[in-house]
Image 1: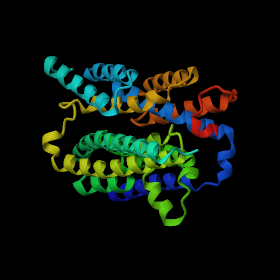
Image 2: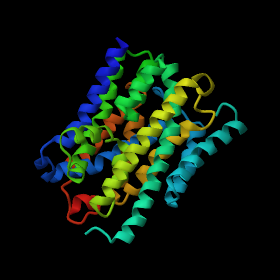
Image 3: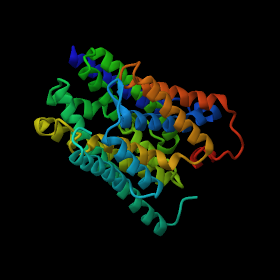
Amino acid sequence: MIWAAILVGCAGCFAFKWAGLSVPASVLANRTAQRIAALLPIALLAALIATQTFGAGQHLVLDARVAGVAVAAVAAWRRWPFLVIVVLAAGTAAVLRLLVPGS
Amino acid sequence: MDSSPEVWRLERRGILRDSVGVGIATGAYAISFGALSLTAGLSVLQAMVLSLFMFTGGSQFGLIGVLAGGGSPWAGAATAVMLGSRNALYGLRLAPILDLRGWRRMLAAQLVIDESSAMSMGRSGDRGARAGFYGTGLAVFVLWNLGTLIGAVGAAALSDPRVLGMDAAAPAAFLALLAPRIRSRESWALALAAALVALLATPFVPPGIPILIAAAVGVAFGLRRPPAAGSGSRPARVAR
């Protein structure tokens, strides 16, 4: 059963990817659709940042990730390169966990 | 409106360098996906099938998150497909830039993910947008699958991604993708609203669903406010 679910999940995800490239161009002429397509990544990325910074399953927690993401926010604001932002966040969290076990 | 060959050569080099950077970051993240897949009860082969054929990180993490939390495989698959629905919207914006038919479109469709779409947006011309899409899509595909394999095979050693701070690297990567899109008061308001709604929903719904609720907030934003002339919230690509 797990194999069937995996394959159906893969097929469903591919169908959405392909459908986006395949719907008629007239959909793009709709300004509301364009606005939504531009705004949606902002909503999704902001939600992913929030849940992956504070979420642990269905609980909200404060741990070393918060410090890592805060450092990343400063780096992103200063327009530092992508890799620097990511490495700074991981390094901050890892060092904080060495200093404060369990954080 | 495309730039001169000399300017384009420099621009392309920058785009490809960024693509590899994004690929390395997501590849490192894939190591934790591979490891977590095994701890959620999947085999190495199942983890690899997900990275090769599902190939959309949020959906893959959603699926193994449901499995690890004791959910059924079908609930996991449903979560994964719902999370993957956003790729259709990316495809909508990429279609006129890529302009593909038949099997080429099928192959390119597999590369339509957060990272490749984000790296194609905000380019000055279609040429740059295509370089960003293919460069990032291919770099992420190769390194995401390599990372999954390393993580799955070495699951015992790396089963806790917290040790290397990988769990902080993931939101930081999303932050780096979001920052350039926050250009107007409206985008700030939407980002804060989406983040708040996702956090408020977290205790009440299964993992992954808060992201979908936040997506609904984004859709509501788009429907509610009439597009004001010169509001600055629409990327240059759509404004043409």
